[in-house]
Length: 457
Ligand SMILES: NC(=O)C1=CN([C@@H]2O[C@H](COP(=O)(O)OP(=O)(O)OC[C@H]3O[C@@H](n4cnc5c(N)ncnc54)[C@H](O)[C@@H]3O)[C@@H](O)[C@H]2O)C=CC1
Ligand SMILES: O=C(O)CCC(=O)C(=O)O
Image (cartoon, rainbow, N blue to C red; front, side, top):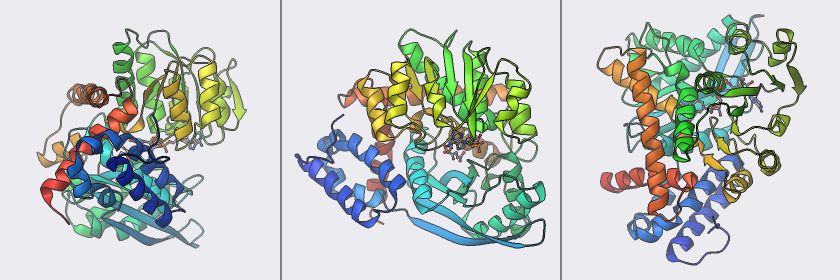
């Protein structure tokens, strides 16, 4: 993949280059956002060459500016009755395809650049699902680590007290992301209901089953990732059976990716948290991992207390030096740089698929593509979570519940069709097998066509 952002030639390249240069000037400090924009822009050159109408409608300048960014103070009381203050955000990026949709992240690193990169990626991911959902993201620079359950509840209530006026089942539907799972969604939903005096179940997804949550939403991102990889492997006459797999993270996405990969016969030997990683040569014991992470909310290092053959190493990046055939980064952005990618390749990795959002930087992606590694980009590979959120919205609107197997089958079919769509878009535009280009193009074209149909606004 050559970068048009380096050397401009055709009218399409000049246009894309010009818009990117303007972005760099305006948002030079938003490095994650610029990184996400650059990855997409590079892929779009062949599309703009064939579709000059996108230049006429100035689609790129419009699509990189969020519809609105809502930023607010969140004030709450800790257990010692001290007043604490955080910054909350909701970036409503694009609602051409459907209501704004995307998760909430509670993590101390949250800032406007990270919110914008996540919301921008969400536009194209959501478009790829084939379901009517636009792109958004939100969150706060709140650190849930070490907080009591009561503090989490008070923070969620304070956050929703600000956010409620900007969301709604047909307007904007938040869900979970890092630091936000079923517990937090419950507290957020309770507060929304209290303020609005209405059980509008479709205002949030990722609710627990029993008050409007969909079965499979908890498992969906991890399962969807593995279903996507299964399609990649199948296309190359391979399978998960007996493959050695490394998964980073040990949160929602990682745990259910491990579960499904093990179900398909793979041996998952390592996973991590933000302090370090564990290596278990006998294969991760998922019951122990779930107990540590989902019940005790403890550190991953405690895993070795239960498994004498396992080892723990402080620091996260070393996980990529463990030899494996399949690597599934499921922790956070930019966790695989060029060096980590080269280490994985020299240790024989064959498939890399992204459960996290933007876990590989541009150098790493180019290493994988240039070395013939099968690479599943986040927008496509982790779309199963938001797709199942859209299925939750559908159940909420029709006031019904579907069974686990019904939702799982729909998720599986969605992942198969996303894979096919990306693969076909890549080959249509002359980039056979390049799912980065394929996912960016397939996600973009639907949104761009919608923008033209809906007129200038
Ligand atoms: N939850 C969802 O449905 C979806 C999540 N994602 C993405 O997946 C990633 C993980 O999200 P969740 O599992 O939901 O969050 P989570 O909060 O459940 O888990 C995050 C995990 O990553 C670990 N972690 C954080 N920084 C790390 C680092 N530098 N190195 C190693 N581990 C680290 C944390 O300790 C935790 O175990 C994020 O990039 C998120 O945006 C993407 C699609 C949907
Ligand atoms: O389910 C959702 O709405 C959001 C999932 C999400 O945050 C993501 O796809 O990154």
